[in-house]
Length: 196
Image (cartoon, rainbow, N blue to C red; front, side, top):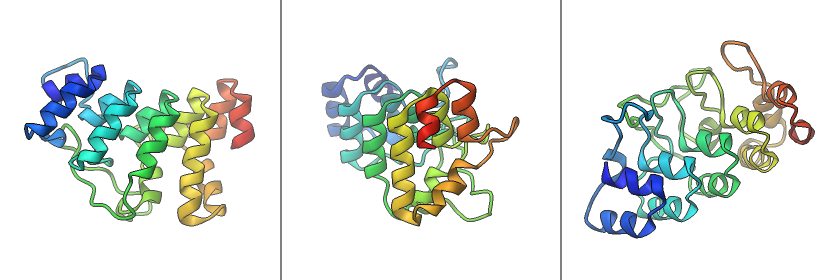
């Protein structure tokens, strides 16, 4: 819990000291804190735009970028939703080309893609939907972050080419079935619409 609090507060010195003492970030959760959604320290740092702490946790190597919280969001979802483009860029740079999804902060496994394929590469992590069916691109579009929309699309394009972005942009969420461009339009984010 102490590492999680330090990450949330952006206390880099404390995070470094705890990691040096052998505290494992993947095992430090907020299971006790009802007001939180089961964030890992990486979730907390990404959500609060603490780039130096995100860097420290990523450099330590014990974090799982694919860890999900209670509602299925990764640190990518949170950074995109809150328009933390520098944090999102850093997370995108540290996604390995192949990874094994592990359990989230509350023990949930990252879900499989709708087509049944496992979330085993960057493209699948970018299309990983939370429990509302929304990807990091949905969150970036709703928040009006042009930089985050561009970052997600550029990362997706690097893996699968430009045409794959059409699929990502036109992917509908669960519930209302909103696409990223519909979310951007409904919130009046004209510049995001231009990117999408």
